[in-house]
Image (cartoon, rainbow, N blue to C red; front, side, top):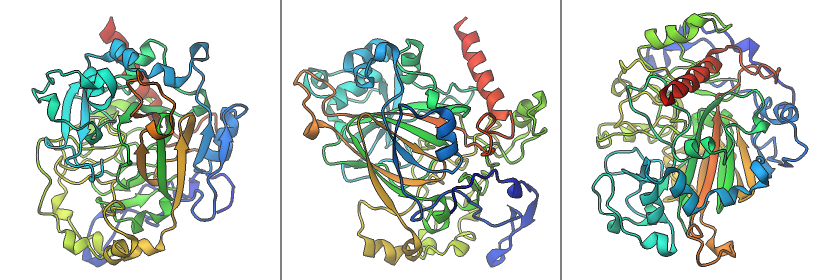
Length: 476
């Protein structure tokens, strides 16, 4: 892959064509399934750069436009040069959002990966303070409180809990991109609403990722639908990366419709354009007023809530046991296109979409892989998924005080480690056994030759304006 920038102009034909692989009919876009044009492994390295001296223009030119991940030394500047670590203390989090209720992922055993479907068994609601009391050490960790969902806190293992993305109420037409406690911290000016480095990228959501793991907890292998700027505050993260050109070899739960030039992966029954707009988007490319409302009124198969960038599924149902995993076990991508088609049902909810998983809540999440690195060695993985032999991986570590830029579509398994073993924290530091990160997700740019206008449409810009305007009106 050369270092030339590209804009995908050759891939702007959105007319559908019938795909009849294995006799399966369906509307697929009329060109190569994987049209990714960014940098790939192993032909690129993952460099480490310094935030100081890196302008948004240089960052866009050298990394965003090339779809190239990088580690960044340094954090976005805060008021009075306060370290990010000092903003994420037990007392500060409780003061700004202690009573706010959050959805916390719960794994059943310490050997499980996170990223499972958020069934009633694997998700718990509690206040921010109750969550902190479960995962923190010292006096804070010994406090006993009655959970907001009437679950006794004493029986919860802090290492099995993970605070990450938050879903929103279905009747919220314009869900706010900032969830607790990030929203409250931004309102107080403790963290930025958008890092300067992001330049013209449009924010999709901001989330706090917090847990506790002495030996390392895995997110499971998956990809995101958005460009990710990941700010590591405490602890350490190990990333196992695969570039988007390998998508068809990584055994995703969902049936891939196509991979765009910028790495945006679109799934059957959740089709999108390269910037994540719904595929049935109405209106012209200049983002006229009708663009936004037309999509909101006319889309009948999109139900992805802004703010769920990681696209966990929230549900009270158990996982569907009727999916034919045995038929998928050979990991033949062409054959997979014929599997589970009847299991995917169109959703009639008409919320605006960012184009991630739209299937029933008890179905596995499209963007997650069935390959489990925590329970199988490489030989076992290759036996079950022979196409994995075609993949090249890169493993890197991100430390507290660093950031990671990861373009959309890059598959990654994240293993999170608490910092205790490498920290000089004092005994009265309630957060000493925690790992903490904040991430900013941005809608994937589809105009990669112009850092001043990185999107071909004004769609997401207008959407964000509408969200923020509604939030302001609510406060008034």
